[in-house]
Image (cartoon, rainbow, N blue to C red; front, top):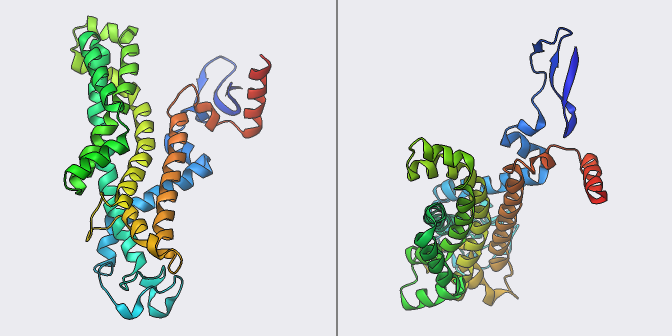
Amino acid sequence: MSLVTDPLDPGSPVASTDPAGDSVATKKVPAGQLPLWKLLLRDKLATVAAVVLGFVLLVAIFGPWIVGDAATDQNLDESNLPPFNLDTGWMNVLGTDPLGRSMLARLIVACQTTLMVSLPAVIISGVVGSAIGMWAGYHRGWRETTAMRVADVIMSFPSLLLAVVVLYVFSPSAANIVAVLAITRIPIYLRTARAESAELQSRVFVDAARTFGAKSGAILRGHVLPILLPTLLTVATLDFCYVMLAESSLSFLGIGIQPPDISWGLMVSQGRTYLQTAWWLSFFPGLAIVITTVSATILAAWARIATDPGQRWRLTTPKARKSMFSSRKAVR
């Protein structure tokens, strides 16, 4: 009986055969065919990033229900209490603000507000931009020209500056913030989907589907979208970081989320006048922004490699073997 090994991972036996040449059951799944969650567990940094993002999402969903009214309850006797002091209860572990409200409770409620702005903006811009981009890239001609010129017009204005102007003219509400951020981010997905779709529309499998009478909508959904989806998800993950920072910047400037609602950016803005006397008012919401954006960036970098068949071997090959392959490529 002989073992067949994966050329990219010689330590992973794939199948064995008996002396007569008959195939025997597979001994071990090749590393390149592992499911994404197993690949994720192999990368400790990406696993930590995924756990952090999952924790942030759970806090946004269930946190406000757990803390109740603690984020709005005022107690002037406990004004500006320093953090890590449990004499007044565990809710004040991160300190209190000038009105005696719990910083921990306000961080939890602000987490929900920040994600309620960032996630819808990314989803709307991603769905609209990707749909228009695939449609334009597949049909080419005037459709592609029109879509690209509209994208160029939107991208000619800095997205944050355009958001500032629009929110200064209109009332700075959460719905308006989502709308303006979604519109300014549509060209990112449109240009990405257009480039990929234009290249795929001349592939053999698309020509075969077209020959058998498949309509353009069915081809885009069944053949083009599955190939574009990994790239679009990676772009969306990175774009989530930008949108969250943009919302925080707008709230910091006073034209984003308005009181009595609260977001991480607004908390940083409200605490900047107390930096010398109550540093924790701006430090903890700023730290939450940094941790969330860095975790999303790390996970996006991992997902870009994990969803690319040509690069996936980098996640399954030991580090020593990676360096050996890289040195061989450099010599060649």
